Length: 546
Image 1: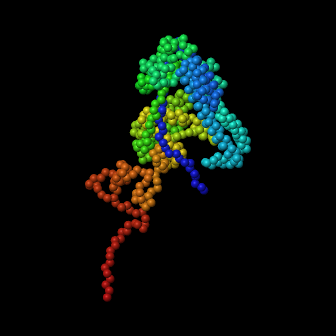
Image 2: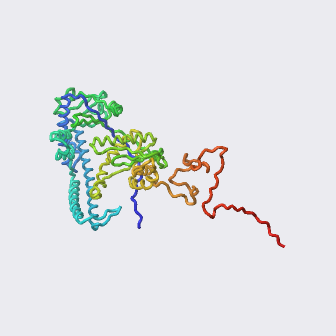
Image 3: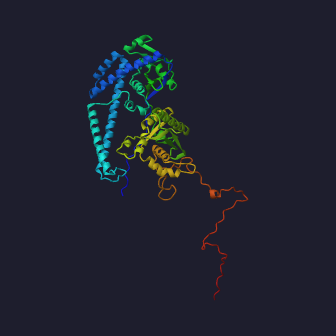
């Protein structure tokens, strides 16, 4: 029997810190005129953004600086130069995002086609292995998968042709909201409610910042006192209520989160981008401020390991975390931080932020400098071709928001002065359960497979093997042939305590005084051979001869 071949395991690394900041506040106490002007500006600029996106998609791979300048010049006449710059930049970003998604879609189709072709080439009923899947269970399933293969090949050919020709499929307002139009009953929406939400999502009210300009933005300007003013497009300039075609809102902004950092930027006339949007369900207007900042310098991996590590295993409904010292030894009991991902997107996001906050606060109390987490990517695990009959498994891993979770964790940990160490997720659950779940289980400590996986993740981030200990030295049970590589070294304080004397061991640890001091009597043997005899041995005198 050949030994199982393990896939290569990547080295752990310290994740890069966040490079941008976004804060939000509500625009309260708006007048009827304020609401009217915001709607007019958003609708007008949204129509311009639709036309610009259509022109950019028509250019395809033939896009150049000349075509970009021509588009911007055409938009400037209907708005302003700065509004035109913001619209064209947003269009370029959306087109580039569609191209990246298109490439990911092609790679997913190619993986599905390869899997189907391999399984169709196997005999019906052939069992698979851990390295490769087997054949299909019946001839009927085999026939259905041949039809599935032709469908995927057709989609793949069409996607490759679109990419070669520079064609992308973009829905301004979101494809999910567009498809909701055909399922209004399931979404619990009326046609009028959906129409209002659809039109609002297609508005455009965003302005890029400019360093060196007054308060960091000439289009949407916010003063340190919280006054918000908007540079109106040329066709709507007659709605201005102040000089230079600007409209000042009655609402005052006061950012509760990062307000001091925002005030420092606008006081120094550094670039700040703003976006105004309407929450249709609540009927509230919000203003979001965002800016870039220098990337946070990551600490060396050895520095992150100096104070130990917290290993976090990500699951569909909770984080399983365990603290480890710098030698890889588990400290204390496992911790679990639960969250619920069954509600709306906003509810799920709030649940994730709350769970991450609990993990970070616990890490600060433990005194560690870093948190270890798996570098998860379930893109290949969600396909029907790989786990077709395991629908429950595909739904389970689809619920884990790996991308959003990693982004949230990195940004929130940076604010707490903690680093994130990403490790390869290979075999962490399997080896953790094998080497750590049973040894750490106790009547008062319940160890799950996920808790053991947290230990495995932390040990891998610390540079230790997941196995609990190495084989003993060659000569005897002491350290004569050298110290065990996985355990703490001799010079580490508290590594081993002084062994208590024989008379003070657990089975004879009763208190003693000078009058009762004595030694333990030898216990009587229970065998016939070793039974004590009543006879006494006496040496006979020498025999007299002669």
